[in-house]
Structures are given as C-alpha cells and as structure tokens.
Image (cartoon, rainbow, N blue to C red):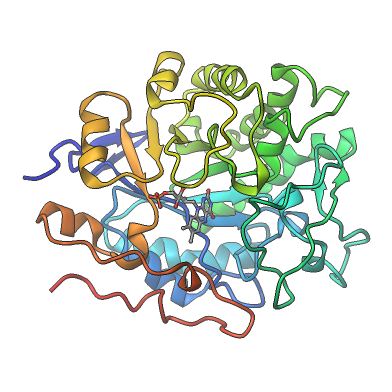
Length: 376
Ligand SMILES: Cc1cc2nc3c(=O)[nH]c(=O)nc-3n(C[C@H](O)[C@H](O)[C@H](O)COP(=O)(O)O)c2cc1C
C-alpha cells in the first residue's frame, strides 16, 4: 500500500481514526444570507467523510465573531439543529467531524453587524486598537460586494475578554448538541485569539497583555470553559507560528509559541494543530519554526499542515514529527483524496482562488463545491 504511515489507523482522544489524514478547516461561504449550515454543506462534508477526521470551516461563536460572508454560526439552538444534517451525514459514512470555533476579531468588518438586533456597537474587536496591516490581508468578503476598507478595531475591555470563555463554552455546547465529535479552537491566521497570543497585535497592559503568560490567559480561560462541555481529548487547538496571513508575525514568535505549546501540553487535549509549512505565507521574522521544535515541548498528538504532498506527509509521520497531517487545498477538488492516494491515482488540480468562496451574487452554488467527481 502506498503511504503506509499516512494511511494507518490512529487513536485520537476517544476515537479510532481510519487514517491520519485530517481535512483542514476551509471556509467556503455556502451558509447563505442567514449564516446557517444547510443540506448543501452536509453533502460537501459527507463527500469527504473518508478523511480520518474532518475539521469544519471556521464557525462563528457570536454576532461579534462574524467576519466572513456566508460563513456559518454555532451559537443558537437553531444553528445547532442546522448542523445536525452535517454531523449525521458524516457519521452515516463512518467519518468523524470537529467544529472549528472562530472569532474573526479585527480581521472582520462592522458591516456584518450593522442594523442587527441587540447590537449597539457593530465595530470589530481586538486585544488592542491596532489596525490589521492590509498588505497581506487577502480579500475581505463582507456583506457588501466589492472591496472594503480594513477597519481599526475597538480594544476589548478586561471584562469583555473575561466573557469570551462563556462565549466559547456556549458555542461548544451548541456544537455538542449538533452532534460534533469535538471542537477545534481557531487561534491561527490573525483572527481574535491569534491576535491575543502575538506581541505585534497585543499591547495591552492588563492581565491579558505583556508577558507570554498574560497573552496566553484568554486561551487558557477558553479551554477551561470548553472542557466543561467536551472532554479535553475532544478539543483541539490550531496555531500558525510562521504565518503572515492577516498581517501577522511577531519578533518573539519562536519563544512565545514554544511557551504556549508547553502550556497546552499539560492539558491532555485531542491535538495541537500547527500550520508549519510556509506555503500560506511566511512572516520572515527569523528562521521558521518546525514540527521538531513542537515535538520537543508538546507531548500529545501533533497535526502538521500547509503544503503537504502525500509523500511528505507520510515521511513527516514516519519520522515522528507529526501524528496526523491536515490537507486543505487538494481537498477542494478531490473529495475522495484518501481513496485516490491509496490507489496512487492522480489528484485533480487545485481550482483557482476565484472558486474557493462564494461572492455576493453567487449564493449557495454547488458549482466548484460539491460537483467535483470522485475518481473513475
Ligand atoms: C478556501 C480556503 C479556506 C480556508 N478557511 C480556513 C478556515 O476557515 N479556518 C482555518 O483555520 N484555516 C482556513 N484555511 C487554511 C487551511 O486550513 C490550510 O491551512 C491551508 O489551505 C494550507 O493547507 P494546504 O497547503 O494543504 O492547502 C483556508 C484555506 C483555504 C484554501
């Protein structure tokens, strides 16, 4: 069999996964104007159920967390009910699925909340009122078609940061009600939790800023709250120490992320998911971190991601640098990625970026989403 390491069974928390391929979380913008999961999304995830485990696209934990056009939410019973279609469809095919919990922070936009009931201040929020550097921002998909200005976020008050633990706990409860096997806390790519972890975006002087310990505190609080809903080994964390996406990168990236990994190692989590490869952008603040760096300080299950071909993924596991590898872009056009690599069949090409998301005038389309055929 090709790729015997990548395609071997693995234990992840309480689950036995059929292989070590993780479907990386990918926002596809098919949740429609209500930002709610739907049958089309259930079909998409069910098509990919042979991955050892699926991580959903980023899913908003509150109105303030919203920041991507037509991405789904998970903070009301109605959101949970809507997601049941997906979890049931994946489980029916023997798959496992975690929900990625996402607060977009300063990388969102106020127009997601303008005129929304119960929202007095629609502005984006962040640890500090520092505007996201726009040069590497990528495109911002908001409620209004066409490009929008990046905004300066409002600094969260200390009590509001305290309250994030309850926000994520509620989202975790909704995820459990929806039937998800676990949750992944999104601390990568310049969204809210990553901006707390990194010195370039966090200049706070209260208990949530300054030292590594203080910058880690909000994640620690969230994990303590979320693990009252799910067991620790049903909760994963995703970080991007090398990434530049959304204008990230900090001079102390190496020391700070090693500290965070050391703390996370004590919690018995399902996994630590590290965007280690440089193919999603590199901040060039020093030598890039490697999976070996994380192996030295993190004793649990490690997931590696970004730019892995099956050969490299297999080698990374064989060499002991990772336990699973998350595959993103190849999964856009290869719903049966696992079956293909198991047969050494050719992979379909990654579709152009113009097909990755929906735009305002192209709602809920299956085109470029669920219409990639399995291999002959
Ligand atoms: C269309 C698209 C949407 C993405 N959405 C998310 C997301 O919602 N959450 C997240 O953590 N990463 C997201 N990412 C990053 C991917 O999870 C992954 O890290 C990236 O594609 C690199 O892996 P790859 O080289 O295997 O594609 C997205 C990437 C793509 C291409």
